[in-house]
Length: 155
Image (cartoon, rainbow, N blue to C red):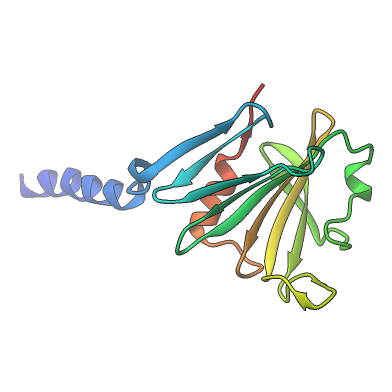
């Protein structure tokens, strides 16, 4: 009898460990730019649209620094798209679409200095390029993987 009670208790405990981040996220949906993404709790959002053809939405908290950039109506093929003067290091998926993956462990160096190291995913959807970049290193943390997997396009 005791063995039967231990298994459900163990499963309940493990499920709490695996899914504990679900209740601390919020859905950010930007209908103007056509995407949605699940964000961790206590993250700041800043939209920069000085260049209407290349808007950027930046997300930050103490552990994360990432952004979504758009290149609106860019007449280019994904295979010929370079991000920050860099060819793709590999291929992957962003919102179920083929994506270029760019890794810069030393950041992007242009002019007087270099950016933070980053990993970026770029895809073309509905005539626009979407670039999701994570800064700090060139590998994804578990939290960054969850954010990447949550990215979707909306109409």
